[in-house]
Image (cartoon, rainbow, N blue to C red; front, side):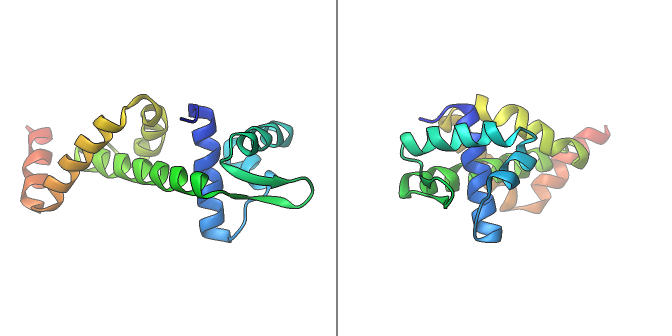
Length: 136
């Protein structure tokens, strides 16, 4: 399994490729607020660990393994955002809260949160009852 830092890079690369069709070192550095040299080192590590194929000066693409992990990481991130929204966390706090907790939860916990999100999505009244509890 990738480290939390590797996960951050894979998630960003996956999102960039999904939205732009490519991911550049400068885009990743900007998104993660790190130096391009740090990105290059991580890209080389991800290449060694077979999460992406990297060719110096030509760029890189995620491997099947990298794509599968990237898809799962984006799912985890989106699910946690939905969960925090359902339980009434203020919109301006959700992104940073997800960034703070996503690497610290097991996939078992993620699956249970997914069950809970599905439970609430099935009946909007459940969400309303939960949010009404915050008002009391």
